[in-house]
Length: 373
Image 1: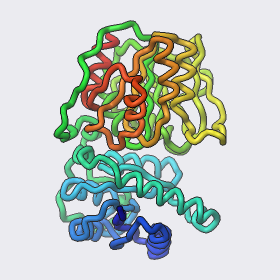
Image 2: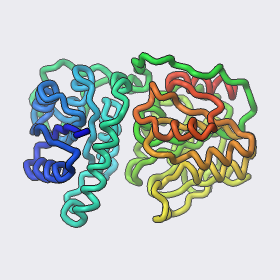
Image 3: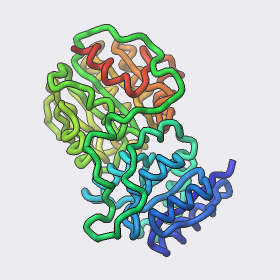
Image 4: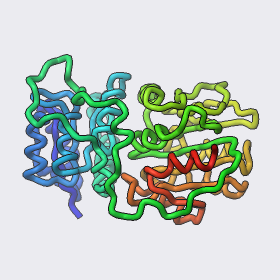
């Protein structure tokens, strides 16, 4: 099936290059372009694309505000382009909160230096997110009033003002049942390990904001994310959550009420003393950080005392690590299909018969409390 794409960017050069790259794939059709967020909304309503690629810094209306309106009026998978800076990471996380599904670095040098690599990455992303669960897009928060104020440099790339924690508690309007497994039994877990990819930033917010400050188990988080983004993401979670969250560093010690986020571009392992080991990203591995590696080290160090959770994401990362955990007697939970943006990673767990429980995203946090407190 041909994927219809709307390309949104105020740069004529970037619009042309993205359109050319996408059009080189016979299964992708660029059905329109837009130069600002207001045009993007109009084009999305008129053309009904399968995917929208979106810049965030544009005149008239920035990309994040446009995403909020699109998710309310015609929910469509959005792929954001972002800069690999701390500010770019912050803005990208705002876009994911607004309802965007995924993001790619906006790097003009890569387009000219590695055109084939850029083509492969962009086309694969577009095909993948075109298959995302549109029901999950309804969780985006409501936008500000439709008529935007005149653009000003100080507001470029920033969403309309909203309560900080709202994206973390907005409901997923899914028609399917919310829970497929009974509530868990309480156990003295020594570690909760959560792995995720596409859709993970918002999913992790939803889960972790439900945990009390006195949550008794240490937590490790493995989110597929570039190196420039994980520090900003950890800071964001720390502000939203009652537990503490930080980007993991070599030598960090696990402790109750603390969640350690694996740094992007590297691998995170845990030893039997509860110490974190951060290793360079191995070029032979597709994912840096890799859920399998962290899960595998947890299985070796903690035996049957781990509760592992696999959330939304493409691919099957986490399945082999979960297999090792399962062999040691630990518990494995998977997010249900109805609440996933992309069901790939949880589906791999379920199909391998590794899931002890399958829960809706909005139930996972409360069940973690029930299982551990």
